[in-house]
Image (cartoon, rainbow, N blue to C red; front, side, top):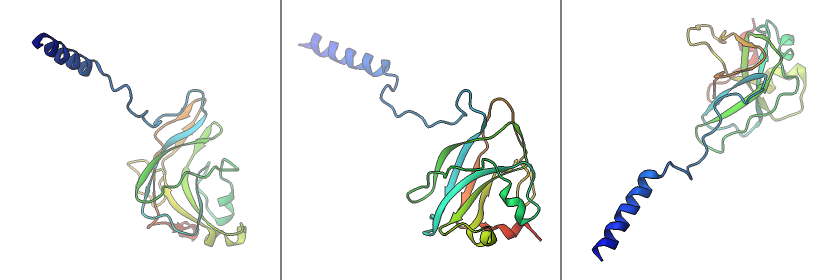
Length: 172
């Protein structure tokens, strides 16, 4: 009887020590997929999603917009909405396919529900967050992003629903 109990204890201990977390959840992606060309990173959402939200999109500008008409020069031309959090703060991984090039502004744009009308852009769109180089002190971030034949990782953005700016915030 003692031998069986001893074998059971040793067997359980060996199984516990040999376990490598086999049934643990798969970690979320944190790098661009192989062969992907564009930008990848995380979006951290803070605060409650406004009820009037149509979507939040990550877009990039080759040059920082200087006037309202420049706001429609972003890429990709048809951005995909980010998956929004149910409630509370959360972080999600994103990818945005972009052509090779240099981008001066990578921004998370919040869009209000309603028909799209460029003349009402200031009421329909808000800057909800942007990529910012850690050494940058400008109001809009000047985190230059260069995309070449591979994905560019760690373009991380914080979307703060309590601190969004209308697009006119950046123009005189």
